[in-house]
Structures are given as structure tokens and as C-alpha cells.
Amino acid sequence: MHTQVSNQPGTLFVVATPIGNLDDLSPRALQTLSRVALIAAEDTRHSSRLLRQHGINTTTMSLHEHNEAQAAERVVQRLQAGEDVALISDAGTPLISDPGFSLLRTCRELDLPVSPVPGPSAMIAALSVAGLPTDRFCFAGFLPRQSAARCERLQQLVESSETLVFYESCHRIADSLDDLVAVFGAERPAALARELTKVYETVLRGSLAELAERVAADSDQQRGEIVLVVGGAPARVEDALPAEVERLLQVLVAELPVKQAAGLVAQWSGLKKNLLYQRAQAIRDAVD
Image (cartoon, rainbow, N blue to C red):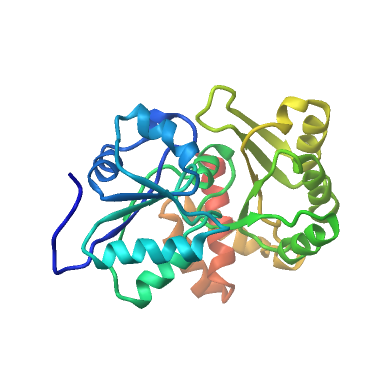
């Protein structure tokens, strides 16, 4: 029986659920979902398969983008009554391009306890297998639906040196890749991760032009859940290192940790430490 009697408010648990393979539900997530008084799910019909698979009989309610304000009010009432509630999305970590922000904001304003139960995330899963730098990255969510707005958004990101991560609809992936080629250039490295942890999991790596060509030619690559990872902008010509700085950096990277080598060269040359760190890391990666 889940009913709690307490003078203290309940806790909202933000619970990550599998992005595909139902066995990826963590033991702690399973325990939490089984013992809370209520599960607020993005789509109760979708989540019912996961709950049945793991023998979870907790009461559920819908909390999605169209009813979030009203549903959040109901959840807050339960929390204030001392009951624990779990928030889940259809897949992965809640609030990452999913509903729930309004509820979290209200909990923060009312000083109600909120606790994460971490686990799967399509963004992190894609980054882990993309083969692109992960020391700094920017999650850009879903791109706009229309090409003009999409290109405008991409133009804002074109000079970012960080690895970029996008979620994209299977219905728009071909057009989005074409726009990426047009704005970022054909040779920008990228990876397309599709249906991660599912039966038809696919990870394509190559230039944006190569990915666009592959997706256009293969309708199977235009199906399912898609994460697109795009390499950051290459260093500009004016950022190229002087020959003596490059030589010193190579010598020090062979003997010292990357951060220390970059710091010493920055002190000696007066150049930006971030630029030197990126180059030092590239030298180390090439050796490894």
C-alpha cells in the first residue's frame, strides 16, 4: 500500500527509464517506481509496457505538454500531502526535450524535495559511440520544422567549436541533413545514431555530405528515434599556432598531462589556454 501519513512533504523523483531495451531500467529506478504513491508519465499507454515488464503496479497519471499545468497541480497536491511521486517520460531522462519543467519549477518555488534517479539518456548514449570529441558539447534539442527557421538556427551554431547534439524526427532527418550540409559545409564530421539499444540500432559515421547521401538513398535510415551528433567548427586560420608554439606543445605533451602542458605553453606564449588545450588534446589523441 503506497499511502503515506506524514507532516513532511513527499519527494518528486525524476526517474530515467530505458530508451529502447527494457532491461536498461536500473535497480534503483525499479525500486523507486514500485514504492512511490503515483507515477506521472508522459504517455501512460506507452509506459505501461515497461511497468508490466518489471511487475510495477503503481498508479499512473498522464503529464504531457498539453496538460502539464493541470497535471502539475495534481502532483503538487499529492506531494504536499506527504506522498512520493515519480516523474517519467516516454524514454530516457525526463525534461531533456520532454515535459516536466513546469512541474519542477513549481516544486522549486514551493521548496518541495526533488531527487534524480539517473539512468539512460539518448543524448549521452549517442555521444558515447559517435567518435567525436566529448570534452565539451552543446545539446541543441530539436531543430525547427521549417527549412528557413532551421537554417537560421544552424547559422547561430555554425562557429561553435563544441560538438553539437540534435534530436531529429525521422520524417525530417533527410531535409535537416541537407540544411546542415548547406550551412556547416559538406566535410563537417558527424554521426547519426538511430534506434539506440533497440533491435535495429544503427550508428553511421562520416562527413555530413556522406550521411546525407546515405540517408537519402536508404529509407530504413529515415525511421525510428534519431540523434544527430555533429563535430564542432574547425579552428579558424587566424587561430593557427605559430610553428615554435606547436613544437613546444608537442614536446611537452609527450612528457606531461595535457592540461599541464597547455598551461605552461600559455604562460610562455601568452596565447589562449583553451586553444592550446584543444590542440594539446588533439596531439595526445593522435599518439594514443
